[in-house]
Amino acid sequence: MTNSSKSPAAVPGTNPKDLLGIKKPPLSLVPPVALIHCSMAMKNGMEKYGAYNFRETAVQALIYADAAQRHILSWIDGEEFAADSGVHHLGHAMACAAILLDAQSTGMLADNRPPKGRAAQLIAELTIK
Image (cartoon, rainbow, N blue to C red; front, top):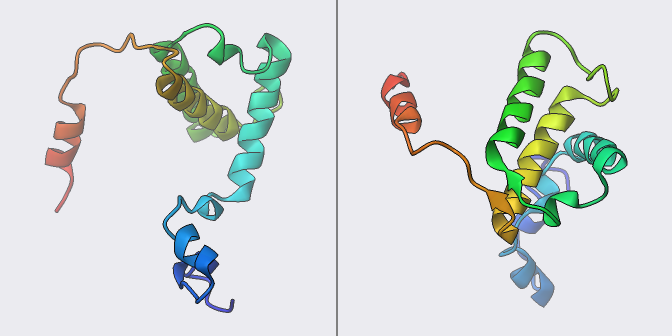
């Protein structure tokens, strides 16, 4: 396909599989480099805590949210890789988000977030239109 703005599944052909496949989540839109860095962070977690430990014992939401924020702030501040693991900070942040999503979907999330606030509303209000 020569038009890089469209995925191959964006234009259904006559193949019956095309008609079904186009309705499914377009996993090919996630950049492979992101998945690779996330997988390295997940591997680091596996080596420290065991594979899929987050499915065996409930995870506290704020522990992973705080960790993701620390990694993002370290990256914003100019550090690419975590000193303790050698893994890209953004890969670690993605892994934290992935674990939160998995835990929430499997019922293994200890949701210790504070009561709902106004952050999303305030962001919308302060967004320049």
